[in-house]
Image (cartoon, rainbow over all chains, first blue to last red; front, side, top):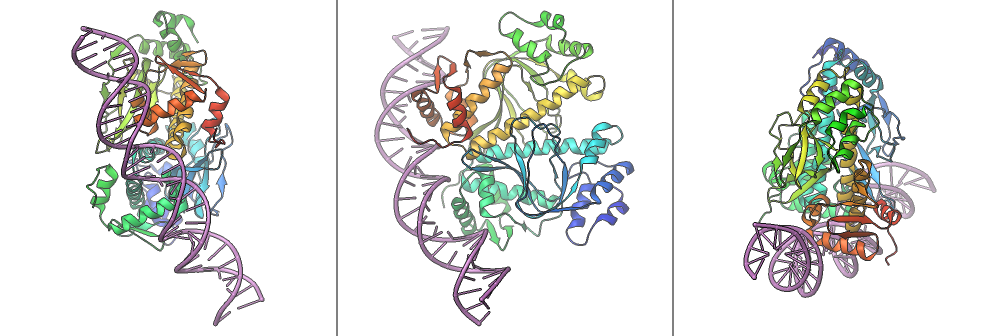
Length: 252
Length: 252
DNA sequence: CGCACATTTGACGAGAATCAACTGCAGTGG
DNA sequence: CCACTGCAGTTGATTCTCGTCAAATGTGCG
């Protein structure tokens, strides 16, 4: 990793952590050469802002516009005919988004800004790496690892919505978010900033807003989670993990 | 496509359709060169049988053994601590399986034979294509398209388990299976052979066996589906598609 | 036949959705 | 300053979908 490169890019505060994480292989195990760091650096040098609620519609057969998220949260969403919404997958600061090269003709999903978002466009990076992967082996590897991680997250999401109870889903999600944010240095003690509304959480977990609220209350009563002023704090990592693994407790 | 090559491989009956479909790009849009057809042909020349119930456990960090399914159905499964099971994704004849190159250290999922299965090992094909994608552009493309199709299926699965009602899930699954089997020539009229037990369907859709049974009865009563002797027949494609899209009908 | 297995049925209860109202809070403007 | 607005969160009452348990029926097979 070439420290000098991202020092120019890092802004005071949270950004530097995110940018540093990106230079270290998007949370994977890849190492980048000088050439690769330069390509990445050029890509990250221009930031774009986007307000909460904005949606990037994926047109049929179009090449997606891949991005690196620098701050804020995004989500891939899909709707049913009567308006029910499901958030397929969440994208946090430091995550690459929209890197899937082939978009199916069928109505897929769209990317929505769940909060205000700042991102860097990665179209040229994608194109260069795809054109000559031999020149950018580290980036090519990191992108592949990233694709695999997304698949892992989708599988977890299927477990949550398919077979887990409400409080198990919530515990599982809390742990996933904590681990992902911790990896890019955005955890605060045993907690993290949680910008999502209960409505949005409901759309992630496939349940109603009211039930999200009641489930959170239960986790608070059981002293597993503290949720206050846009911040979640995990009070008992072990018991939360046990809950998320699907052990059916004897009711308290 | 070089017809002469797979004629040697095709066995009487259903197999020839599946093998022909594989030579035509795994249901994607890729075209294979002579060299690629030969590699594929070599890969498909040896068939392995595997009884129902057998599971391929994916060991941590191990390279999966990719396969082409020639007959029978497989599924990727994941379990919770107390035994609840979710079938993440189904693999039908003509589908490539286990092609994900990097398996995470964390307990992922395992591949289970849901029926008796015959398959062809694709390890060498995978290795060669990964080593020199320039020699096998068509295969490389087909594999990438295949990865993308799997992601699309996972997204559909999240929609089903996350936001759809029981009868909508069933309708949606029936249509997916019909389309996939039809693509490889395994549809029979408006129907197809359905080897899964109601238990297995329940684990796919994230519901209980009893409820699967009752939901199927409802679809039969509504003259949308006929299910008899291991065969499903779609009686009204349009209404089933409408149901699967999430339109809430006025109750009959 | 008898066995194993899949499907079907009924009764009951648990988990979650729905609807509607109410609270709390920050911002806004009179 | 305070009323007014908008939005997220909270609560209660009710309904509904679906799971659980247990038993019965059906089906293929050695």
